[in-house]
Structures are given as C-alpha cells and as structure tokens.
Image 1: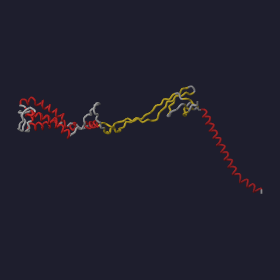
Image 2: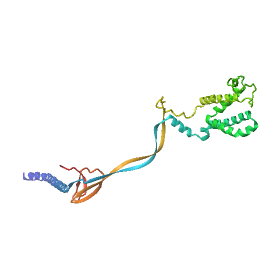
Image 3: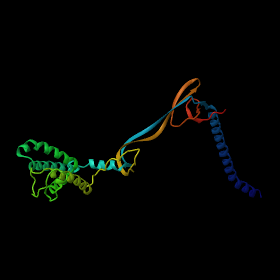
Image 4: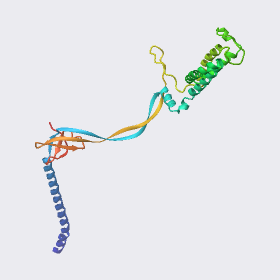
Length: 281
C-alpha cells in the first residue's frame, strides 16, 4: 500500500516541475514588460512640448526642357500666309515673275510697232521697266489680256476708235504708227478682263485682309486648327523643406524638417525634435 502511494506521488512530480517553470517564465516576462513600460513612462515624462517660433518653407522644383506639341486655333488667313511664305522664292512668286517678263516684252514690242526707231531708242528702257513692273503687280493676266485686247480691237472691223473719237479703224492685221488709239483702248480693256479671268482660274494662295469697318458689315472670320510644337520648360515639385525655429531652455534653436511642424514640437531630454505636437489651451 505504501509502495503504491509512493509510485503515485513520484508520477506527479514531473508535472509540478513543468508548472513551476511556466510560472517562473510568466513572472519574468511580466517583470520585463513592467520595466519597459516604466522606462517608456519615464522617457515620456522627459519629453517637452514647445511652441514653434517661426517656419520658413521652401519648395524644391526639378526643371526639365522637352519638346511638346499642342493644338491652337488660328485665323485662316494667317495659316495660309505662313504656308505661302514657307515656299521657295520662285515657287512663291512665279506668277509675279512671269507677269513681269510678259509685261516687259509686251511693252517693248508695242512701243517698237507704234513709234519711230529714234523714239524707240529713247523710250525702250523706261517702257520695258514700267510695263514689267505693272506685269509684276498684276500677274500674267494683265499683260496677256492687254495684248489680246489691243490686238483684237486694232485689227477688227469694228470702228471703235471712231466711236470714241480717237481715230479711224484699219483692216490691216498689224500694228503700226497709223492708229495707236484703238490699241491703247483695247489694251486697257483686255488687261482688266485678263486680270479677272486669271484670278478666277488661279485664285491667290492668301485671301485678302478682312475689312474692319465698325459702321459696315463685319465679315465672318474663319479659323483653322493648327498644330504647334516647341520647347517647353516643365517644373516638377519635389519634397518641401521647412526651417523651424523653437526655444529650448532659453536657447533659440533651428532645425530642418521634411514636414510641416504645425504649431508645436515634441522634444526629447536633449532638446531634439521627435515629432509634431499640439498645444493645449
């Protein structure tokens, strides 16, 4: 009987030992937690809250230059004028150059057939320059129309010169000094018609300027969407810096912070900033 009791008691000893070990660990852990909490409370009691004296904020930007394109609305005439000016010189002014050449040649030919040889030598260069300038301004339509009108009116059977009192008709198919008045009349009429016909066939690349008359009818202006490209500077804001001033134990201090400090700061025992704070009123 005693032997059985001793066996039962001996079988319970290992469980008691384990329980005692667990209780010892729990007590030790509790002691550690208590000491940590005590240290934290002590450290917290050492912190101070001081008001912010001043704050200087500086915004840092990163600048880059890149080519960008955008859409704009421009008047149609400005767009067409820019395209016209972008062409090579001879392609841009081919009508004026051709008109100058035809005008100069037509004027010299007409002068040669209407005046004497002596007068031709005197007036050939001025007439060529003047008629060439007129052809440059009017384009090919003016010289061509003048030549056609003068020739037809001079050599037709119509007595137009007699009607206007400038001379008699002639049936000779040539130009000579006998009767220059019909040639002049036909040239002026033909030049006007030639200019109108030429402009109808070959309209100008750039329309005329709109008339800005407040008292009259204001024409509607047409706009075109135009793509423009260019170098653009782009500023990308980065992190801001804050220079914060505060007072610790009568000493003015300044610190650089990466955040807005607000109205107050939390300081450790040495006066270093550990975070933001709020003032209690």
